[in-house]
Image 1 (cartoon, rainbow, N blue to C red):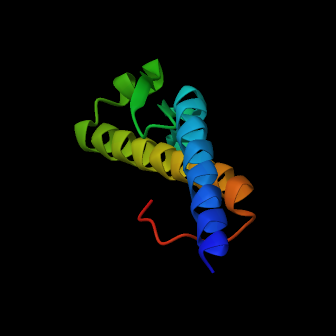
Image 2 (image 1 turned 180 degrees about the vertical axis):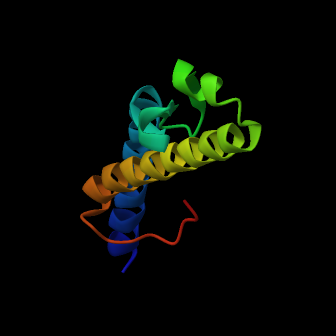
Image 3 (image 1 turned 135 degrees about the vertical axis):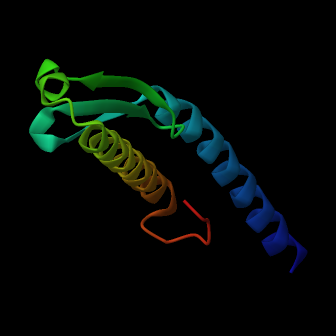
Length: 104
């Protein structure tokens, strides 16, 4: 019985090391999201950080502050969602598709 526990602990440690390595690697990956037909775009990394936000000149010509605010929020939310999906895909590679009880 103790041999099985030892093997289980060894497997858990290996999985934890793989998760840590994956988190480092995913932190360097990015996704891009857009809203308003590309009038606002952002780039989000695997750490759920917005690293770039671009607003087209076209939106400035509209002079619609509320529209701009909505488009920025929409682009950022889409970027964060894509980043979460990327992280889940990478985690799935480690867990073999088994869903773990993490809040991502």
